[in-house]
Length: 69
Image 1 (tube, rainbow, N blue to C red):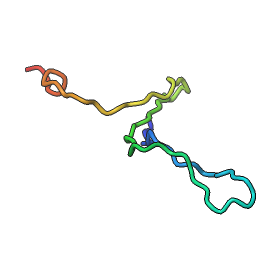
Image 2: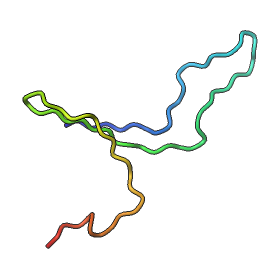
Image 3: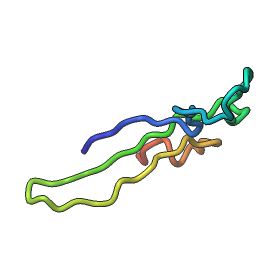
Image 4: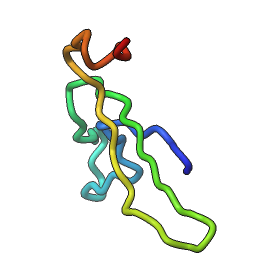
């Protein structure tokens, strides 16, 4: 299994503008974006599952974060 983090807001790499225009701007989102984990798993035989995204939770419940006794 391998995991990496990607942001939900991407910065543009190229800006295309009309020749002779002095002021150009890039269109990006106004929000900061969140870091989302992307994971993929492959076993020794070569079987794999599709990559999956792990988004941050908004609310944590006690029964989800603790183990039963």
